[in-house]
Image 1 (spheres, rainbow, N blue to C red):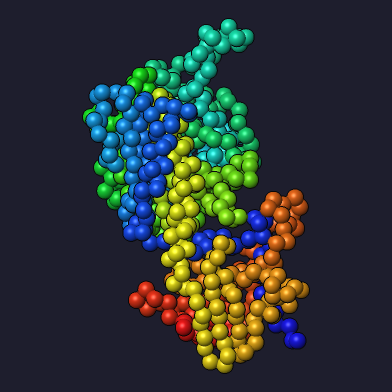
Image 2 (tube, rainbow, N blue to C red):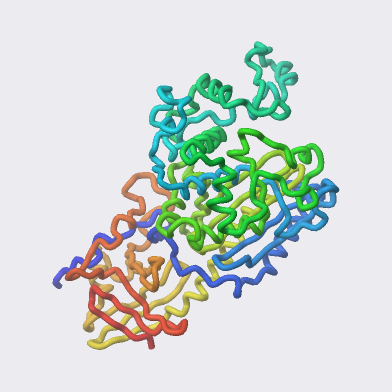
Length: 537
């Protein structure tokens, strides 16, 4: 048999249950919300609220949970705590206002990305004269600020333990500090530090980590980002926010100015004192207010590329570094969680925010083109916020995945052409579309793929995955059940990304399939490498 090196190098050895799909969506995102049934999710949340005393009290914690496709909101749930500040909103809706705290960082980063010309690899000292010539800040770039990899000390005065609970800590063995060491600004009730004092403190402190070495969450990094943008453009963060994001998207509430209390979701004491409280320099890292509806307006603006180009959006929504585990990564302000579903990884892009009285998440699942806004308020706000995020992973993703599989059945079936050429596609519990049979000129292409890998046809798994443009799909080949779920040596890893578009036959790719769709119906498929054009039966 003549060996044709079609996809020898496309072998994708799976690190997750021998399933090693290429990066990106495994099926076309489902059409939402027309086929999403909210009843199951509503019932699950109702049960959580009824049993909430196990982890948080539904009587003192309000929350909103809303989901959107690229087109519109397809699910929302609002719970109003019985005990909350009476000056706040009487009825919680998608237009009710919450503090969103560190989601500010994500929006601030987007503001930077929309500010041109700029380079993420520009050293911040180029725009901050106070750091010019300061050796420890040499090489710290804008990219490092927004990805928490610059080593900038986390909070400085904002959460100083002596100011928070010094008396009890001294009883527990902490020393009595010299009065000159006690912070005089950038703490609740003390007012903001002047720019001069802020940089004096910054230069006094050592870096928390070495720049570029690893990730370490930093609020002060985004204070610096705001100062850089001001020196770069001559405009403040609120001005740039209005110009670049809120005005173009029609977001009238989102900003640093607190909405009227009658619109706000406000907790009971002590958290209620923070509604309208100006956090000074830290407004640049955690000062924004917004509503669930406006957060989803922003999400749709991102998903539909109304702000950044498609390529720039995809580049932004990528990991920038690991965060100490297999399942957590950090991007340009993103906190990324990789969960396992049906023996394959799904990435959940989030930005969390929290302060006494409030917690929030803005969430994206790029594989399905969905986003979520989670806002909570009360004496235990992290409880409902984290529960809703977990529900998105445990309930929403399976539901949406099922819809994607159902809608992808339009591709399933047998395709035939001249010269005894055919292709049969199926959907099973695995990722993508499975190639059951494939012949060209009367010969089995699957036999060729199996022979190239030294196995029989029954020992390979050949699948198609969407590219994300039009109706183009890519093929990946795996040997069946040969790797553990978790690797212990590099040779067990999934290497499929190396072999995308690796082999061509007389100039054209053999691993690329283009479907022909007419009026929502799949009527045919082409493979340019094999010069095959097949019609769906």
